[in-house]
Length: 102
Length: 187
Image (cartoon, rainbow over all chains, first blue to last red; front, side, top):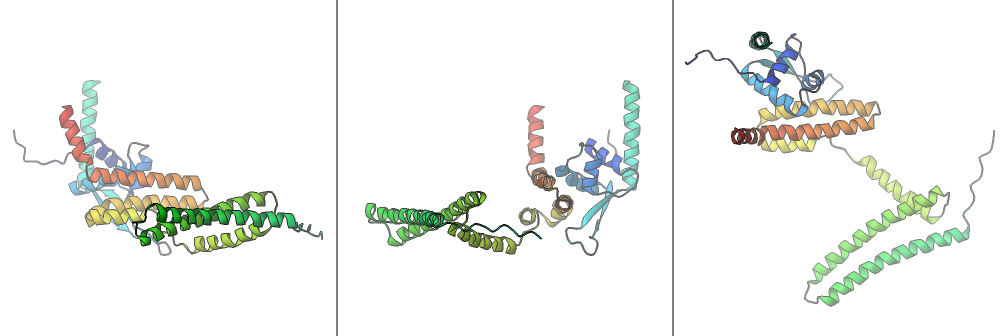
């Protein structure tokens, strides 16, 4: 049975990132790693975020450093509308599964 | 106001022993160099003189460096015992050179060489999206730790940066392929 509706697949790590960004605030990679209490790794967080960005689940912007500071500009990530819907759908699905197998 | 206690003048015996020691070290180093040079020339006459001279010169440089550190170390022990003398003077002069070199050394930012490497091998998008933010975040943490004088935390952040960096490189290159192959074999 073919399905024309293409829904991006979301891995467990991506779902975790979506959960951390679900309140709508902007966060950067290290912040997400710190808030995940060890579930996310610094070496893979930006790879995951890039993949999610390609899927349209998150959007990013680069913020330059304040005036006296120099260095690499920080990249902030925010959840998109599609990301919110996919996260909610996944949450509903997981809850339904839990009820089914409880 | 109390007068500072006067430093005792080193005795002639101490000064002589320092000179003797320095002389012995110097002669020993030069001796090794000369013996090596002559042995190379005598045992293997067909060897090019330029090559022998190069080897001899290199040996001399190595001896000089070893001698320099040896004298510094020796003087350190003597200074701890409160001794003075020519060794102390020599060490002061040599350490002032070291300090000048250290002061004038321009340090590169943390992981800048790694960024240059990935900049060569990966696309600009990958570098901007993955490697630069990763290095930027941890470099900032590193500088914050240094600013607060937490050296060990800074060292740990540096280790974390290198590990995360190479993990990211792995996940951008062979990682997914290896995972897929292993998954295929496992299934």
